[in-house]
Image: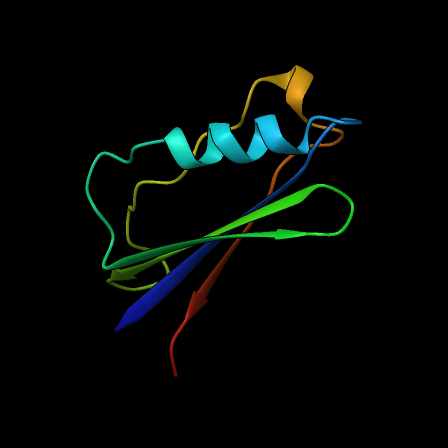
Length: 82
């Protein structure tokens, strides 16, 4: 079973580049099968990682960035491939 973890954050005003750099620099306790990073209008950063396991599996996730880099709390979702 493949699980995709999605992590999305909105940067504080004018700090999109810093938030993107911070997200790219984050290493996980173990390497996912795949990891992709995206940006979107409004200085949003999205990181998707793919893992073997189920929705309830304990998997490494990106932490919350420093509070001064974000405009709101990070959003996280887990999806299971069907």
